[in-house]
Image 1 (tube, rainbow over the protein chains, first blue to last red):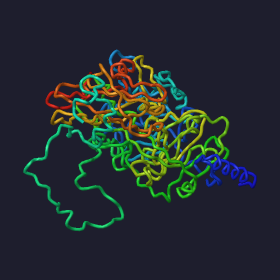
Image 2: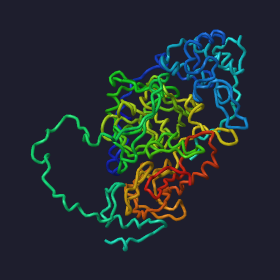
Image 3: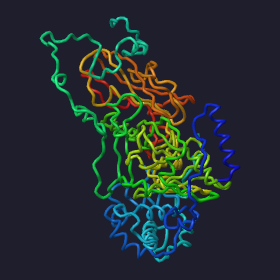
Image 4: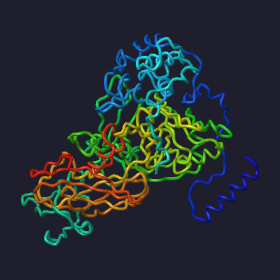
Amino acid sequence: MSTLRKRITLSALSFSICAGISGTVFAQSLGSPISESQLRGFDLIAPPDGSGYPEGGGTALQGKIIFESRCSACHGMGGEGTSAATRLVGGDMQSEERPIRTVGSYWPHASTLFDYVQRAMPADAPKSLSSSEVYQVIAYILNMNGIIEASLVLNRDSLLQVEMPNKDGFIDRSQAL
Amino acid sequence: MSKQELEKVAGNGLINRRHLLGLGLAGVGVAASSTLLGADAGMNLEIPSWSKQPGPGASGYGSRSKFANDMQRLSGNPNPLYPGGGASRSPLHQLQGSITPNSLHFERHHAGIPDIDPSQHKLVIHGLVRQPLVFSYEDLLRYPMISKIYFLECSGNSGTLFGPNPADGTAQSIHGLVSGAEWTGIPLSTLLDEAGVEPEAQWINAVGADAASMGRSIPLNRAMDDVMIALFQNGEPVRPEQGYPMRLFVPGCEGNISVKWLTQIKLSTEPGHFRDETSKYTDTRLDRKSLQFTYPMGTKSVITSPSGKMKLERQGVYQVSGIAWSGRGSIRRVEVSADGGRSWADAMIQSHQSEKALARFRIPWEWSGGNAILQSRATDSQGNVQPTRTSLVTEKGNISTYHFHGIQSWAVNTAGDIANVYA
């Protein structure tokens, strides 16, 4: 830390004591520098802009085999689920009755499917799928929902082109008081 | 003071809260009453056995009385296909004051509780910052900290009340996904300033070190406000089920964004759109549009005693007590009704009215053996008034069941049985 910054910090500290403010003034920086390249194996975030998609890829046909062995115990052989919460396929947000919300009917971004499967699935062994296996499994889920063709090789480029049916169904309330 | 002098201030037996000061009611439970029941004439008090021999001495770590062991969190049946998922609920009906003991603070996990060695844990701040940084637990312990009392509530708390039929439950089973604690930690802004936020950064993406690596996004302006990295809860290191060794704490907001086992904060121009802010924790309206990033918890109160599945054993004066909170400020007022909302009386708010913290309220009530419907209605410092259940459900529908904060009703029948009803 530079001498100048130290001096500024110390004067801020003494001011806050005089003013009777307890709290947040601190005199040192304790974080250690790290580079983004050192975080490549640590950062799993895959946002909609595609910046987090890794190498690899594959098709729904490949994904079907993985899905049936690793996912179907909870999600059913055809993604129909074993409970409302585990259903992945079908539903219609505009249905007359209470809409069934699934990956196909509800999720606004295909990136979320990649991100979530990569970080959290399968529930009994998270992070045990390779990047290509994640592409393949989500290709199968998207294909079962009629969103992509079975023959499409899903990878970092083609996933970026996938549009979800409910992509315009959300309203950002993050700045609402 | 005789019963005749109690000043009734609303229908069906509500008594002026000022009488709490003179009635000697403080601390009486639901089974007590002010009716003068003389001691059994045949009962002579003796010196008890525990007064005749020394007990065990001091211990390294305390435990509660074995006679109080029935006070437990309530959790559902474990799902063998989803190990580590689920929640447990605080026993609100048995607690008093406005601080929840750490052992009874509610839990919600998405992939179980990781067993983290703090000497191996890292907190990384990166993305749109001038200098990505990594912090150890030891590093963080050296920063100046702040301590604040806040409530924490799961967005799904009381969600069953959106349903068409009233759940046959208790204050714990219906409302137990809320707790209150003193949280101590480092303002997030301190560490973000140290890393140097780039001007184009608009969001933080916070990720935990659990097996789900659960992530949530928060706008930078909120993150720079009163968000902290909490290291201590009620004075001791944050418990494993609450995020040991550290969690994000976002005051007043749905519990899910206070990411536990915090290990990564990445600054970005756009939110991550994680599963738990798209598929889950979003609120689908009746027009089928869904609200995303609905963070603040509504102005809310719950009567915790008398409450569901308790029984009033005899007529007389009871203390109606509960908790109130708001994600947008402090609690200014709590009113109580004993006649299903036709008339209301102001309850005494016992706690210091901290921002975004639980406030304990109390009011005396004389039950004369008839039917009654007990309700409470909170008003916060911003003037937000807790809505009726009907108006909330009419406005929001029940496609989503997050953010229920409507008025809830406990019906007392002539036998003294108490049940959750829609009234």
